[in-house]
Length: 162
Image (cartoon, rainbow, N blue to C red; front, side, top):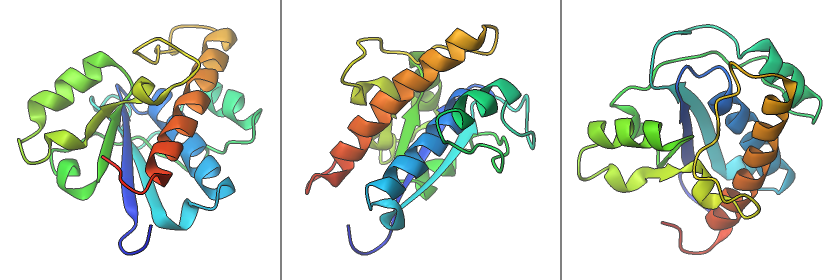
C-alpha cells in the first residue's frame, strides 16, 4: 500500500464505547499485521454528547484486558468534512449508517460502510451499544469488533479495495 496512507474513520453515537474500541483494535491489529505504517485511523460520534471525554471506563477496562489501549483517545463529533478527510468511514450500526448516508454527498457516499459487513463469525448487522449494559455486553462488543476488524484488514490487504 504505497503512497498516501489509507485513512479509516469509525463512527458510533457518542464516540465513547464502540467506535474508540474499534479504532484501538484496528490500530493494534494493523500494527501486528505489518500494515500499521500505511493506515491512519480515528473515531467520531454522530452526536456531541461526550466531546473531549475519554472512552467509557468500562470500554477501557474490557479492551485493556485484551491488550488494547483506549486511554489516549478523546471523543469528537463527526463532521461533514470527514467525508473528504477519510478514505473509508465505518458505521457501527444501521442507524449511524443512515444518518451518515444523509450527510454524504454523491462523490463521497461510496466511502461509507457498515462495520459488521466485514465480520465472518457474526451474522448481526449492528454492533450493539453496550453503554446501558454490563460487563458481558462490553465483552461481546469486543468479540464482534475483533472479528469485523480482521475482515476489514483482510479486505484492505487485497490488491483492489473498494
